[in-house]
Length: 266
Image (cartoon, rainbow, N blue to C red; front, side, top):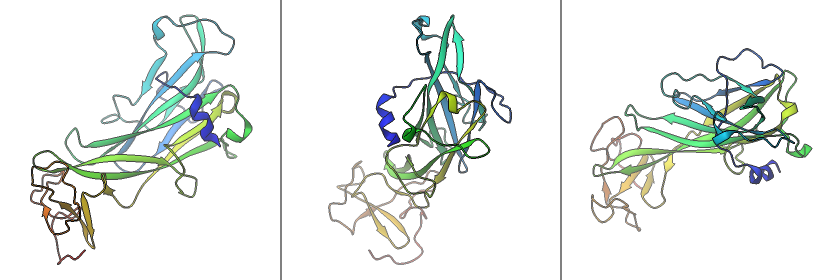
């Protein structure tokens, strides 16, 4: 039912204070994450005038301050201390939402990464059924699972990957949509919200009818020719193409192993 809140959300950016303590203060909470290797997150907290306020911030300046937005590649820090209330240009503001970007690297080139999004909504009040809960030590967890989807691109049919992240329950069962949670302002002071993401064991093709699965991997359909960028199989399970791996290995014939170690049969 918490997904109902998504219709209320229209986030952009906002304010996080770096260098967090072990627990948040009466005006902050801790946002942290447990992510797979080579993963990172960036966050933008969105602030709006507090309930009953009629003030505005000229041009919306200083209401959109991020964390890990530029630093996720090289200076990533999993913890941040998020302010719940702040005053900008004399206007009292409250936290409205946090936009999450989940990043993952799969190669050494700068463009060898994928990303997907998540969201945390914060409201003065919420129906009780929509509120997340905290455990005895003041922690709440936001669960998700990310899967790599692979495809080929360019004249060399180089492997590129797309990251697809979905919300799960605590047992890992997929729910609907991207990772999402909703809290009230009064729930959060001094608490910790933990983004807990797992990576799916298996990768899958990004687009259907372009690869055929064999016992030891996936083979790329040739299509009309090697220059055919879409290269749908269209029932042809005999003609396959080579491709290049992100690490530079060329003339590969099966993904993810690159080379075949046994005779394949569909």
